[in-house]
Structures are given as C-alpha cells and as structure tokens.
Length: 168
Image (tube, rainbow, N blue to C red; front, side, top):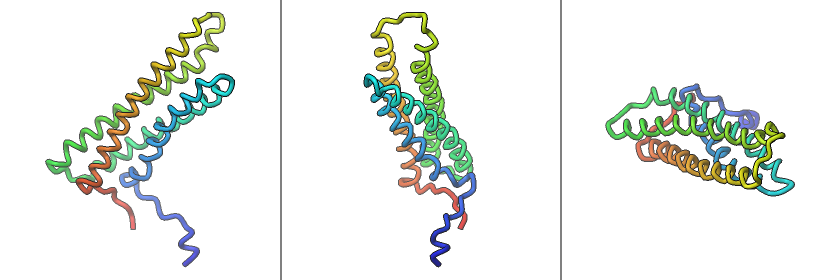
C-alpha cells in the first residue's frame, strides 16, 4: 500500500490535462513583471531582468500548451446556451493573451539585448527607462487580460460545472 501511495497518479489524456497545465503559465507570467521591475536596480538588475525574460519565455510556451489542451478539452464540453458564450469568450481571450505575451516576450528581449547591438549609437539615458516603463504598463494590461481568462475558466468550472475528463 505504501509503494502505491508513492507512485504518481496516471496522467490524464491530452483532452483532460488542461487543469494541470494552465496554472503554470499563469503563475510564471504574473511573477515575471516583479523580476522586470527588480531589473531596474543598478548593478544587480541585469540578472533579475534576465530572470524575468526566462519566466516570460517559459510562461509563454506554457500558454501555447494551455491553449492547445484547452481546445482539446473544449471539444468534449456540452455547449448549453449558458456555457457557450462564456466558453467562447474564454477561448477568444486565451488566444489573445497567448499572442500578446509572445509579443511582450520578444519586446523584452529586444529591450534587454538591443542596447548591446547598438553599441556605436548613444541613446539618451532616459530612453531605456521610459521604454521599460511603457513595457511594464503594457504588461500590466496584459496581466489583467490573463486574470480575466483565468476568471472565465473558473466560472466554467465552479459556476457551470465543466470538468476535465480523467482516467480512473
């Protein structure tokens, strides 16, 4: 009995794994701006800024997997008149969030590595600070969209009883 308790449970099929996958990109993408903000610190900031990029990249990759598993699971959902619009909005916002975080990840990489590529060009000192601040404001807006996607997913589960299929 102890040996079986130490074994991991079987993984659900692709169309049932969405609940296990979706929380990782949410956590990574919501934690990343803290590292970006710490990246503003003199001397130690570069490491935090790079950590923020890694979190964004991993979270964005996770968002692609979450959307794919969500689409597979959505095919099994009985679309009642109450569920259909919430599910559609959840899917549409998830697609938008995936694209927006892809763009944000690329923009942050350009902000981090762009100055090294422009060695011969001298930018005013305020330009990087303004660019990073604008980036953070955009990130905040996308984080709100991400939270709304999660909220709609929570409504589907807790308000409408939509569940993923798990093997027994």
